[in-house]
Length: 305
Image 1 (cartoon, rainbow, N blue to C red):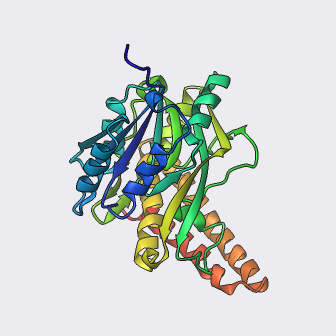
Image 2: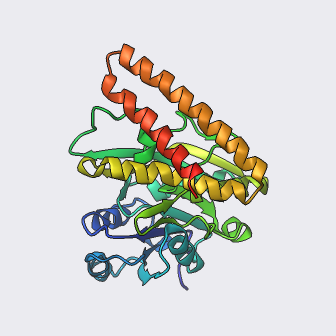
């Protein structure tokens, strides 16, 4: 009798040859029974040797249910949907290709859903692993751009309008199918442009079905952040991508929804100036301007078609 797969981990990857093996190794090292989970790696047009590394890793760990496939339509939403469509598990876990899961990661996820029968979705903590060290200008308000996420010290239900980040999110497979997966109009990174918000849109639709989305601070992944890549150009792409994605998402609702979002972004820009003054007065001037720049870049993404 074939073992029952309880959870499927989907990892979409793009040019992560330096880190994908560590991500996969962290899943090999899980305390969870290897016969109860599978890992589906979806290569999204990598131009480095990511494919060779993945295939070698899978061949070297043939006792595990690890699979590799290609998705040529560029964008994380396409890749995640492709992986999810092949999943056998009753739970779908989405993890980034440069993340490292704690050893009890899958065990805690499955235990949580078995206890919380009302849970439709789940998010966990994401801890940045800065290489070589956290930059002086990094702050709580900018860290979300590099994947830092710590919603609560306790297990709780996300408030309306709050949701997990994409690199550590779990959903019941049945609910994934019910909402139609990720919105292909919000693909993520496409070439040099980012059209973000796919996770936000995903969980908003799940909440609209009346599903509860929980946060669990003990379900942890460590997300690699190469500090030398955090250039102004990179930070602009991420921040403006948030605004660009919001533009698409809210315009699909109504013109008035877009106007309200524009007002919200202007308010947040004003709040950023206040935060910058506070950081300066507290003796942390290096943290001041990045907070403002984040909101300016996001606003640009919202405004520019």
